[in-house]
Image (cartoon, rainbow, N blue to C red; front, side):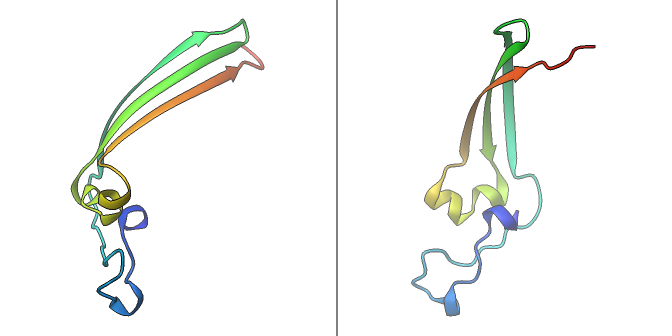
Length: 88
């Protein structure tokens, strides 16, 4: 968790630094739900749409980075095309 949500010591522990030191521990950091739809576009090409929702929990959700620059609620939307080179 520290890699993504932690903040290092500010220069000389400056009280005016944008971010204060924060080192989250380990544990469950998000709850997610997702679904996808696969549909044919042609005989060899398929389309895929994936939608997901995640909620950052615990110490990850309490991170200064999330509070200042992001959100505890994370939404994802992905579009893909898959080409079938060979079929058994």
